[in-house]
Amino acid sequence: HRLRAACCHPQVGASGITGGRLNNTGGSVARRVLSMEQILDKLIDDARLKCEEALRLSIMHTNAMAGLCRLKTEAKTRGFAVGDEDDWSVLMKSGELYRESLQLARQNAEPVRARAEAVLTGNVGFCSP
Image (cartoon, rainbow, N blue to C red; front, side, top):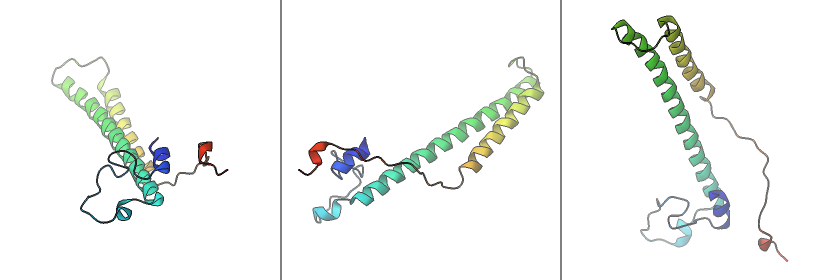
């Protein structure tokens, strides 16, 4: 949605594509207006940051589940009732979850170029007569 709007006007909305980070300390309007290439770079950077954050959250939650499995076995040794699974299977599950986190990190360590087919669409009102 934002990309389509940005293609029609580079700085859409009250804060524009830069999210209000432009300083309005004077200067010409032409210096504050981003080129389409700058807008595309910003949108790509924003998407990359969102993906990195989603990966961090996924790894954090997987590690947390592994830690909870480990804590479950420790709680059993201290006399708390925390389920009917035996300690060995809980520890194995913990190890599997830690390995899954490491695998996620390894698989996504190197940046990958996205390849897709571009389809140009638009309003017929922009076509020349």
